Image 1 (cartoon, rainbow, N blue to C red):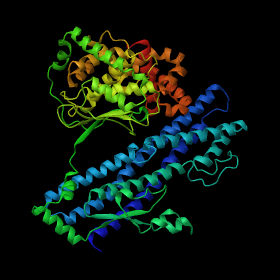
Image 2 (image 1 turned 180 degrees about the vertical axis):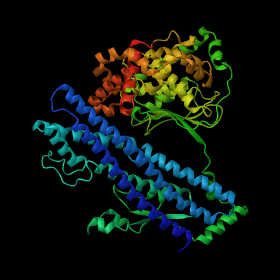
Image 3 (image 1 turned 90 degrees about the horizontal axis):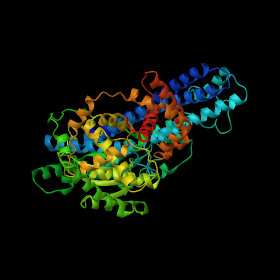
Image 4 (image 1 turned 45 degrees about the horizontal axis):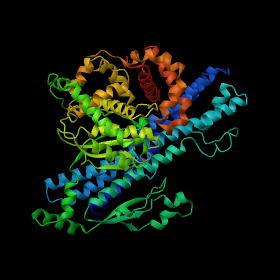
Amino acid sequence: MNEYKKRIQQARNQFIKLNFDQEKELFKVYNDAGNRLIDKILQMTDSRTKNHEIERYKIIAQYKTELYNNLNTTIEKNIKKSSDIQKGVQLSFVDIISPDKVTNEALTRTINKVSNDAVKQLIAGNYYKDGKTLSQRLWNITGDNGNKIDDIIKDNIAKGANVKELAKELDKYVNPKNRITAKSFKAGMDSNKISYQAQRLARTSITHAQTETLIQNAKKNPFCKGLKWNLSASHFARMHGKSDICDDYNGRVFKPEDLPLQHPNCLCYMTEVIEDFDKCIETMRDWKKGNKNPDIDEWINAGEDKTSLKVTTPNVMQTKIDKDNLEQKVSNESDKNIEQSTSNSSIIKENKLSQVVNKFKDLNVTEYDNRKKLGRDILDILDLNDIPVSVKKIQAHGYCAVSNGNNSNITEYVLNSADVRSDNYKIKTAFHEAYHAKAKGMESDYFYVKKEWLQIEETFAESSCHYMVKQLGIDEEISPSYSEKLVEMLPRLKQLDKFKDCVSIADFGKIAWEDRLNGVAPKWAPLYDECMKVKHDWKKYSIQYFDYISDNLDELVDVMLNNMPQYREYKKNMIIDCKYAMDSLRNGHNVNDQNEAMVVKNIIAIAMNRLGVK
């Protein structure tokens, strides 16, 4: 057995161990969450008041949040581990055939990049036909878990169970140690242990991570003849003498792009069919001597990073702040950018904006039934004829792709074909991305101060699209995206002379559009630093809106859900989350619950827009 085959066997053993270790981790996640749920149930009173119902919803919401966070952390970590295991096999092949250190390092970069991209695709939701992200799948699973628990609680309360009896019944269902099904459960519940869906998702995810890493690397490898399907050692024992589609695939060699998707819970594995090693080594040596081989050239160069940034309009539930380590910051340039933004004549600036608005009005944007054409027409009015426009299934509502460099080199404008929101929200997103796109060719400090840059750029992009849809006669109240940035940055901006007269989100957007159309470059470090000098604590600031929010909470949550209609079934839980978040903030506490923080910031942003940024 050569070193490469040894590495394949080693990888298989590592994967089996990873799968076993993951089962133990998931067991602990559910066991710990279940124990905390039972403890909180036992602390409840036996009264049947409205507060009792709210307390129950709160307990279930906390249980769901704990499960979601811990499951997401565990499964994401293991997806990366599984990919790394397979990546090790590819790297061992490169070690054998590389003619020198430089070639080895170049191919290592290719394998690292291809493998990392495969993981991102799996987590981001571009891997499956339904386009759901890992986060969305887990949110659905934990939401389903919470609904079943709620049904059990209500069913047992209706039968007169006290909290001790209720806790005992729940324990039979939520405790992964317990294999006995309670006879008092509603029909249908006893056939599906609460942890099963997550276990299946986790097993399937690490299997697909390993396979997709192999597939994408095999596509690049000029020496790969195909991928062979192998049954797992436990296949026959798990099938109990039956057969499935995997038996038909066993031993067959597929082209990488034609390999069938492994079914849920599948533990089959793939191996590359490689040309004779001596021939591979000889071909690489000949290439090194100067013999032309475009396939090897492409393989070598695939590791070069050509596009490193996507500025996106996010799905709110999956929004994450960029936490890259910032190794370098732009030097303080005095306030050059701020001075530039105020030096032009306001009349000239307003004229440019009014001209563009009038051209947009001529488009009659609400009558479009082709979003790609809408995006194309918007960019053409902005003199951005060379930016490609596409509408395709992506995680975000939209994005502008930007390549590395000191200038904003916008390479693509994309809208989500699977966007389930109303047409007015889709129009809003089209203008949000148009604001980003209009920075094409301008100097930018994004690659030096990413987090700070996004705070300003996304605040302006979101404000700008609110201004534009209002100018185009769209009267629907639009719930803002990027609420966490708006709540943090708009009150700070309002304390600067330039923005002091702004009241609504659209008011800030008007200034943002004026500056962008007049060539003010998105070098945001100086403006961000100015904002950070303003004393602002969003937690204390938000309290002034709470009375209004309390009086109108049901309506406000409905408006928020227009921007995330896929989560409408959780409206009742979101109302409770908002109430508890406001209680925490009133009492000077942080909002540590992820769902509570998300909901309350969205509701505050809507209230700020209605009552004015103060």
